Image (tube, rainbow, N blue to C red; front, side, top):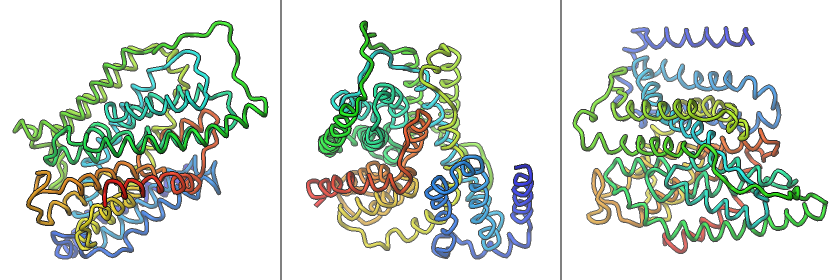
Length: 480
């Protein structure tokens, strides 16, 4: 391990030296140009593909080794992109793109997840719940409805532990967590900009805060279809469990349901307010239009800095004011957030070239119909971060010259197309484990509690068989 660390450190030092070498920087400066994506080869996307393959295959083939050394894989694939990019486009351009993704995307992304993870981990739904199909469906519905108001991450962290506890007596329970990811960690977050980051980007670009309520009919259809599907699948599993003698403990005195650590709801509200302020302040208060100068054109906005401070403050106070017994009853560990933090920094860095190419060539895809925007935005959001993917196609639609529709920064977007982009980005994050960060966190918490979750491709088999038919129905009813 020490040897690996020394090698990684040496490579990083070499990269730093290379990036600041004047010969390299000056030679590449003219090549970079304003629209960097137009000159990028698709070969630069190989590290991103390698990163995804490692996430998909390594846990299956070398599970224990992957768990210990996944950080080394992240460093390797990140440098596999950064070093060739620095050689060809210069140290200055490389540093700028790297710092842009770190301070423009990753820091606020991981701080928000960290804050919600900490605060929700200090809230426990206690009492005797028995995981029957009906009870499970009700808990999924509650979590789905919460997602738009406390975020998909907040709702996921709040609801996943109670639903796992309610089903601890069950043998067959993978389907419960899979449908939880579908509904609570993704689809439920479509009604407000707080629910999912892509919608926050729309809010920041001129869309009314409550415009997302236009997605309510699609949400209702998806909830009905997926909960019906869930009741069928979980009902069969439940009957098999009962037939094999798996039964919940019968208690003479049932404990009533109660919310332990309920004061932490205040801290959840603080986090939600922090997210909203990060979008509102730059548009309404001149001071917050600027930011801390990081490097070149890269700034860390004052609104983002305020968001980070508020969220970390809420997380700190949550820990200080909550009894440790609540975290113990929740089986709280740092493993889930640690895994997300490590893997997603690699994903964010290695997907830089894919997003640069998409930003320049997205308009060349010939997208005109709502259903086209829905599927292309959705499929790319399944593997790329759904926030920048949303923004690329949002800007593409705004630049198509529409003269009526929803007024946004840069023009107009017909409502049906905006619905297609929004639902594609939010809903299809459920197609893979990496489509949305809460997916990974829920999977990790489930595995910590002894539930053997499907592999990367195993999960995709679930999403292809359950979600794609639902999305086809969405297209036929709402987008044609």
